[in-house]
Image 1: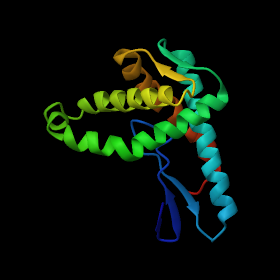
Image 2: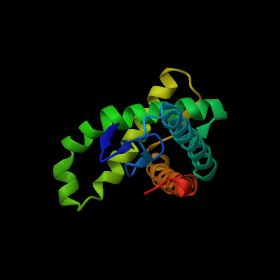
Image 3: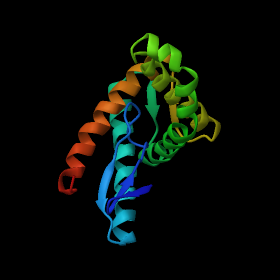
Image 4: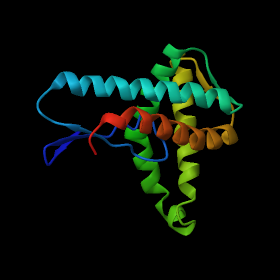
Length: 155
């Protein structure tokens, strides 16, 4: 989180893999509003993950609480590991005009699935292709849901 010109900018990374979503909240020192926004973003991430699991074969989420925990794991991977992978694969991304970032997103989602499996969370991806298609669908679904949820947010 950072403060820019009277607005609090939150980079949730929980609900979008292909893009960094930005939620702008009028920062007037109201922590309750900030927490509501955080939990709303978390729920959007979990709902997006459940919808993606129902659309893409090869992605499994056992329950909504498992999706909420998996959203936290995806957010952790996107915040910590994905920037490192993106930096290390920058030459490939430049050569492919950015298309290699789809592979980076699939690797990130697969790593999140592996970590979720290590903690018995109830989120699994069976292979590279479901991870690739899942990362694309997850981005689209979370973007659509986020657009509806952020209707009342000043931009």
